[in-house]
Every structure is written in C-alpha cells, then in structure tokens.
Image (cartoon, rainbow over all chains, first blue to last red; front, side, top):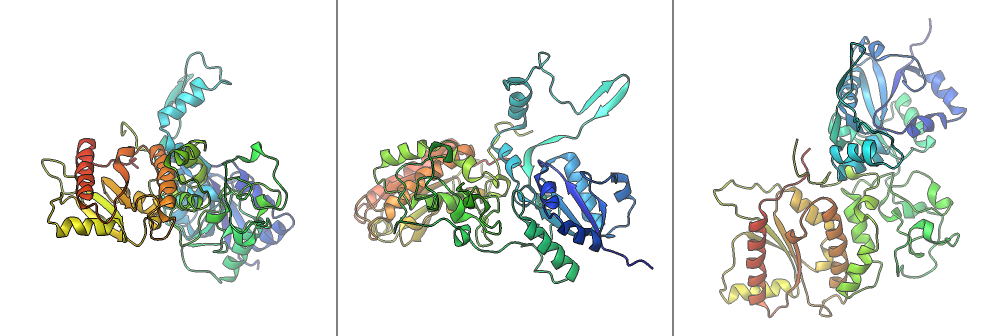
Length: 325
Length: 144
C-alpha cells in the first residue's frame, strides 16, 4: 500500500510570480520535496482547479503556502477557503508577510491608480477611456471581475497565519528549512517568522572603514559608482540594512546593492519605516534646522522608500483618503 | 493603551506632549509651581532626553486617537547630553515628511525648545497647540 503523503497547496494572490520562481529555485532539491509531499493545488504550475480544492474535506491539506498581498475580493475569498482546507497556513514572501510592493498603492486611492494606469500612462492607447468594470456584457454573456480594494492588505489581516517566510523572493534555503520543519513536526511557536531574528548588518559582507558613519549627502545607488567592499551607508547610500531581518544571505550587498528591507523588521520592531527614520537621523551631522529641511527634501519619496515592502504592516497602514467609499 | 475620544457637542482635542527631563519638564514644573493655568487637554510624558522620542511613538499616538503631539526639548546647544536635541530636529523633519505622505497635517505635530526658566512659554505653546488642533478637528486616519 502506498504511503499517504502530506498534501501541500501553493496559491498566489496579488503578486508578481517571483515567489513561485523561488520554489523552482530549489533546483534538484525540489525532487526531494515532491518525493515527500503531494502537491494538490498550484495554479502556476499544475492543472488543478479551484473546484478540486473546494471538493476536498476541511483540514485535509497539511500546509498551504500563500504568496501575494490581498488586493481584491477574489484573493480574500480564496484565502478564506484555503484557511478552512489547510491545517497550516504559511505566508510566503514579502507580499503575504508585510504587504510587499503592491502595498505602496496604500499611498494612493483606487481611483488615482486607475486614472494613472488606464488613462494617463504614456504607453497607454485608450481613446474611449475604458477602465475595468465589475460587470460587462460581451455577445450577450455577462462577464465579471473581482473588486480591487482601495487598501492593500497583508495575509494576516484576513485570516489567521501560522508561519511567515519573508523575502522578495524568499531564499530557497528558508523554504527548504520550513518544509523539513513541517515534515519532521519540529515546529517553532505559532506566528513565528521562519528566518533568523538577527539584523542584516550582522551578516553583511561589506565592511565599515570609519569609526563613525557620517552621511554628508543622501545618494541613490544609480548616482554613484560604489566602492566595493565598503559599507553603503558610509558611502551616502540609504541602505535599509540596519532595520531589516537577515536570512537572505546578504544577496544584495554581495553585489554592492543597498538593502531595501524585503525581509521586514525583526520581532522586536513594530514599524520598520519609523525605526529607519530614527536610525538615519543619528548618522548625519547637520544641526541647523534649515540645513536639515534641505537634506530631508533631497530624498525623493522618503516614506515610499522606507515602506518599500511594508506599507500595509506599518502603524498607519495607508494614506488618509478624502472620501471614504 | 487606546485613548478613547469621548463624543462631545464641542470637539476637545487630545494633545500629547513629550518633555525632556532637564529643560522642558523643569519648565513645566515652573509653570505648575508658579500656578499658571494651562488647558487640561494635554497629557505630558517625560523622557530623559528629547532624542529618545522616536517617530514610532508619534505614529502610535495618532493611531490611538491623539489629535496633536508636541515634542519639547532643550534649546539648541543646551542639551544635557550634548547633541540629543539635534537628533530630535533631524528625526522630526524626517517624520514630518512621512506624516505628509500619510495625509496627516503637519500642524498636528510641533517641535519646540523650552528651557527650565520658560514656564510661561510652555503654557503658551500648549494653549496655542490646543487652539490649532481644535480648528483642524479630530484626527482622521486612512480607513480600512
């Protein structure tokens, strides 16, 4: 008799598909995973339908790995359905964990975004100014679309999440570690982030050459040719390493790119953006208020930079809207 | 702790004031011992140095229903810890920039230098802030 293997489901919500790619990045180790588990749902790779999952018994899936932010009503429905069917829900990747890059939409309203994307964008040709509708009729057939939400949410805003795997995309080692932990039953406490609870600077291969970091001017990485092997903060580049969790093996810093904070904050930190503002204020020396204002103005979209991956998990979550729908 | 706003016929602002131990709190003490009157709308939190006040505190205050925040510190050059208040200045302006992105009026936050001898100034700052926030109305954050 064949051994009953634990059932695993993958699902994607408001995401780019990079997380799915990171599963494939397991390379030959994916064969070990496939040998140990039974994949029952994976829209991007396998031909199982929503109805197949709906037909399964509640709780019959051992673990569902969900990536992507909750962007529309379809995402919310699928998330709630998978919560019923799966014993463990793992928020996989920065979007499910923190809200991710789609979360930057929280600095705008849905109407602003539609206007920009479907009407004003220089690459769009839309003379009839058509924007997506919830319902439309084509040749007598009614077609429907899910509602796009005004506010992007992270996965744990709609359902209870058991574990988080951070990263944009997560390092394959983290996925492998999580799969092994789940298979062996050796699991950390509910709600844990399955990545080391240490700071990025801890493992960063770049070295500090001076005793004290002093930023004279804020630069973006494309504005300079960085000195190899030297701390990017020392070179004036705003690197989010000081407020970011590690686990990614310092992938960006290895190629002298600044950290953008995709792994989110460590357990002790509630809001990485405000923490970064705190940290940044300690490493420049302007004391005159006018100079300070000038320096702050020299940073383009500071809030979007520090909340690049985490707007929906910040304290304030979104911009105040003039009209609340 | 969640601060609940009690609905009243007229809006009464909830103001939070951070005061540093060495100058501003002593200034407020002076206002008290001199029996000066100031609005009851303000809640004062003492910190050892204004440099301790993180943008996180202010954002959390707004989230919990505070309508306005005053950050008071030593005058420039007077900091007990040499450069704590310069950090506050930099933090304040970075934070202001973020608050603007979240659609919160910059009139709801105020940074001010109050020395130990400036009890009258402390009273004026609080009174002015209460009036400013009263005209702005209760804090409104992005709806869910």
